[in-house]
Length: 527
Image (tube, rainbow, N blue to C red; front, side, top):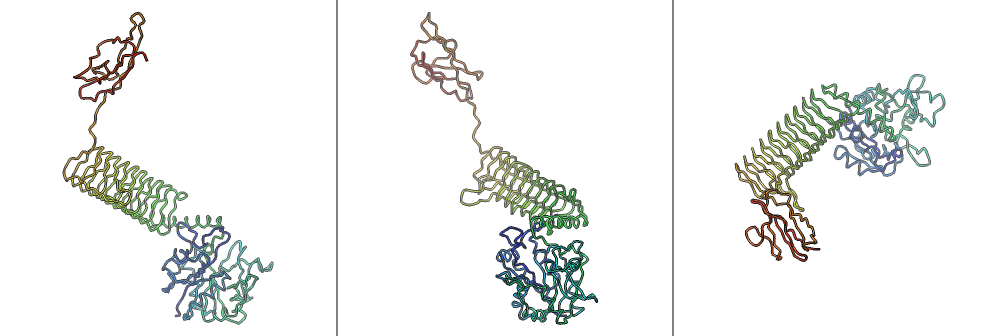
């Protein structure tokens, strides 16, 4: 049996997409549409696919990497020219050539294998995959002889009224005998002012030369659908999303509301997991059995262990063990690992950190570049201060430690095994194991400011002054010579209304045992 080489045509811009991005890179359910074609292609042949790139070719090559070989079509001169470029690249190859399009994400290996099998069984020069459509508008029609043999493919713009009634159409997918294809391509002529070469003309050339031609009619006509504009792209996305969800549900996963659930085809989900509304699962995400995901959760390229729960949260490139609880409103960034039975709760952001078995970070914390041991409790409002403006520094919290609420851990720092850090502390030095550490300012009380009530008594030609303090249990001392009042020094203890002449400078201060005194009250009499 001859070898099979697969060529994927991906050089076009896709003008109707109205974008600078190559058409084949538009994502369908999170994956470039050309990737779907490659996934199916590699099921048919051990030889790497050959992708013809042109517009935005560097982007296509960067997206697909080493999954394929590449050949350039610098000028987009039609499908015939693209295949001719591929044949030059395959100068030493003499097997069969399967030609696919990079914008047909629904094509299946099953349909392609049927095409290849028929091609080899009939020893045809060319075999065409066809489909019968209710509305064939826009497609080239398959024209057959009275005996039912393929004679030519007529594009719609060239079709007669009778030919337009034909519902069997050309999908654009072919299997060729490469030696015979080379000869036809050498004789291929451009068909318009732009100098474009059409691969469909090869079919007519083979028919005229009496070559054997074969067809395979697909029983899945939806497989040939490829979006040409943003409207069709949205329709393609909807169909692909439904197919993905149906496959997942058929495997034993409950999807509460498929209409609001978006899942990448690469995602794997275990049996008896429930996916709630508003969930987005992207990349190489793997979710174990018996999990609860959502509602309103995004998980990207992450591993979620059996029996875990994630709600109202965003996870990117993280690993969760078994029976882990995440959320609500948790943001786990790349490099985060949460071990079995641990909890990361509401309004917690975490990056590049490890949480040990049955440890808890329940709420309102930022944990960065941190290793948390087993059985640790992180109080609300704890912050790891990991960035000094130039580089990131690590924090280590060993097994069994307890971090009080509103603690700042200034990295690099280590909290030892079984240590207790008092609430409100700012930790700048390592905390010894099995110790109690409190690092915060001593709490103090200050007497409230004084208030003066002044009344001028004309008969006495004096001012009557009363001194009030809202703090209970205080002693008020005052001076009238400009000195600072003191509780046990200069100053008189205020007992009753003071009578002073204009121009006197009154200073007063209130004292209470165990408290800081009030700020001095100053009054220039008569002002």
